[in-house]
Each structure stands twice: as C-alpha cells, then as structure tokens.
Figure 1 (cartoon, rainbow, N blue to C red):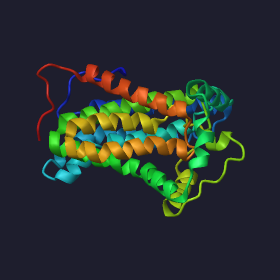
Figure 2 (figure 1 turned 180 degrees about the vertical axis):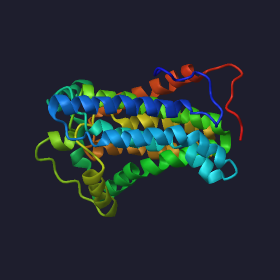
Figure 3 (figure 1 turned 90 degrees about the horizontal axis):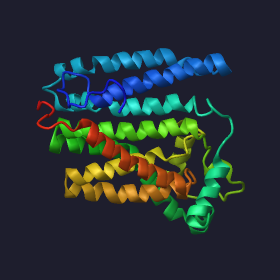
Length: 299
C-alpha cells in the first residue's frame, strides 16, 4: 500500500484512495523523468509541467463532486476520474521503459514461454490466423477500454460509491505493479521481437487496431500484460456486480486474453503474469481498504 493512502473508505468530499494512488504515482514517475533528463538527456521533460496540472486537477475533484452531487452523470465522471489518471500514467511510463536498461528482455521472455508451455504460443498461433478470427480478436482487444468504463458505471449504479472505489483502487494497484515492471524488465513485445512473422490479415477492426498501434502503444509495455491484470480485476468485480454484468464482461475478457497473444502484443508469460498481478491487486486492495463498520457516504 502506497504511503499516505488511508485504509478507511472516504466520503465523496475527500480524495479517494485510488486518487491518492494516482497523485503519488504521477509524482514518482515525474521525478524519474526529471532524473532521466539529467542522466540520459531524456526528451520527455515536457511532461513534468503537465503532471503538475493533472495533480492539481485531482486535488480539485472532491470540490467537483460536491458541486455536481445532483447530476448523476457528472458525479460519476468525477468519482471515476482515476481511470483517466491510469491512462496518463501509462503515457508517463512509456518515457521511462529504458530508464534502467536499454537492453530488451524479449529473448528471456520467449525462452520462458518455451519452458512453461513447451512451445512458443506466438509462433504456433500463426497457423490458426484467419481474417474472420482476426476481426473477432481485434474487436475483443478494442472493446477492453470502453468495457473498463462501462463496468465502473454498472458498479456505481448497482452497488454505490464504496464498491466503485474498491474497483478503481484494485485497478490502480494492478496497473502500478505492471508499470513498475515495464521499467524493471523492459520488453518490446513479440511483434517487434520475432522476425518474419506473417502479417495478421483482417478487415475493419484490424485496420483500427493498426491505428491504435501507431498512435497509442509503445515498445516496452509487454511484461506483464497490464490489460490482462486489469481484465482479471474486472472479472472479479463483475462477479460481485451481478449475473448479467458478469455474463457480459467475462466472455469478452477471456477472448481478450487470447487476443493479446493472437495479435502478437504479448508473450504467453505476459498473460500469466498479468493474471497473477490482477489477483494479487484484488487481495491487497481488500486487505488495505478493510475497515469494519466503515462505508463510503451515500450520495
């Protein structure tokens, strides 16, 4: 549990644990970017002033929630704004993946795959690639982000603020663990490591994913799979939100797990590590936020 995070759920006119986690993490990674500037002449120093703006926004959030308590949509947005913070943290870490080492660890991960599975999942899956299957896999990969938000809203609507904050804090712990490992064990991903991989053919969703690859992804976010870590957290909280929510979320997340290897975004071991981190994040979150008789104030 990060320093300064309260173990007691807080009312909406205070900063939530997930928001504190975002503030502390942004501060930490921004300091690393400053260090990177002086040590390696890193070019991402421009993100530091932006980080300050983001932190000030998070400090303002409790006031925003108070102001918009009578507007359910805005109140939810201000309650779930930690999700935007996690996206910004992903951007920050992208500037730091080679902070400790410029050597990619893909060879180690590819060998680990062969030890665990007895073969390379990334190379073996190429024989199963079909345009229709590619479209299904790319759809599952793309639906992940809106599904994170949709699940947050369903939790908020069905179970209230306390469960929403439990969900957001668990996601934050999972993401943060993955982001730290991006720096400690930088790996480019199978699509950059393996030579002469056959092109993954597809139609509309494949083309959309190619745009995402160019504009929103970076080398170095392979091990562990932050998407799979978050997906594991999502399945746990979807099960608590009700049968219908669980039946919507779980098949898409399971298909999404497969798509990370199918699309050559992750090694098999990345997926396993992501699932383990997701489970640990839920456990740590439950232990950190457990407080008998405490509850987030109902709005």
